[in-house]
Figure 1 (tube, rainbow, N blue to C red):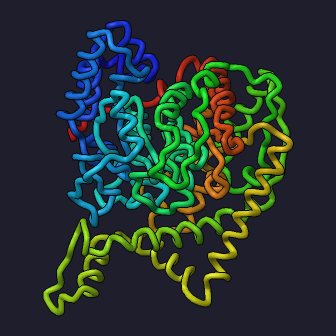
Figure 2: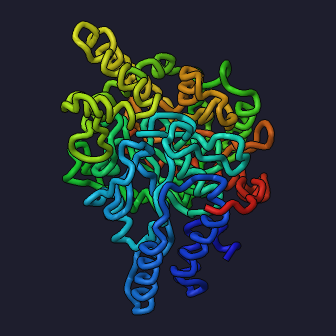
Figure 3: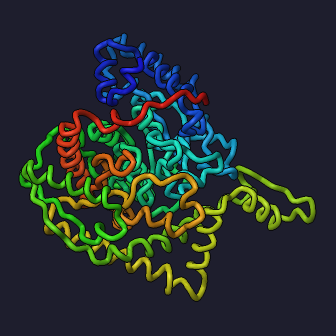
Length: 501
């Protein structure tokens, strides 16, 4: 079983269909792996062994009866703890939701259950997805499988660490400013942010509603494509859900052909601020694509330099509004002060005890930006910059098919290194934020090893509704790089020692 959990999700699905292994055996093997190593990693906040095994047994029975099943039926999956799951705790990494059991499933979770994927449990995250390192979680940080003294990225470090450590072959993440792609880069995994609206947000605990997007976290581009096809589609419960038909992403990932593809290198997302070895792996990846027949074009997106500032006004403004519901009155934590337990004082005590420092910081910033006299100067101006970023994308895509940049300016930094320096932490999202402001899709795949033998990532961006382009270029580059490395990058990661959950 140690061998099969290291295979891709597509290979595990093939083994299930061939009768090489049962879903119950496969699910139990992943649960055993979680028990063996997650005590050190803290990738999971909740593991639901009984429900996962029950789903696996049901799929085994249906497969034995000859029922036609989804391609990924029986392959286990982990879900970020910001996605609500009926009957399983959902905390969003916060004490204010500790012990809350949702009464319904998110739309994407319903799709997973209907397809027969055993849900192993819920993964750790920065509190309410606010962070770039999974250090703001109220339940302790997640550690990077490559080096447990380093961060796994954020806010979805739990999902990336679970996939990168072979605790799960697939995971769900959410990406508001890079929280799928940036963890992917620093853990050597694949992360995809779909086009905004192509995957339902119904059942995602919202941070910034105009930016949040759920997507796949996997070990291969093909696996991401298969999972993306499963969770995408129109949902009447989500007013921003697109009605577009779901593309054939897996077919695009298997093409392995980039001849004639125009790849734009974003001038504003390279050079100063990017670690030399990260830039070197990026350049080497572009050279591989060029040798395979792609055309490399330099493009300028001048307003991208303002994207970070605009994001850190829009996002906290929307977060301050979305998090107003956590008031100690309706659900979740309630703290009743001994003196004068008025509604106002209960709300004040609950939010003071239930929210961490980073959440409080962003609520204060967002409330200020939305206040009378400052709305136009801050939030309004940020939205104007957002429009300029969208225009930069439109102009760039008139010249090229996809855009490319390093995913993250550095490799994984050490735990605690930036936790007291919010501005330094925010800079980790400089390359990923523009896609969220514009609603365009993005993918991060491993680009090689940089300093200290740690992974780096390359990001590709495509026009809205053109997600299949990401799978075409990502699948081709993945094959080229793995051929040069002699196998997947994760095979070069150090073996984890036991650390019981």
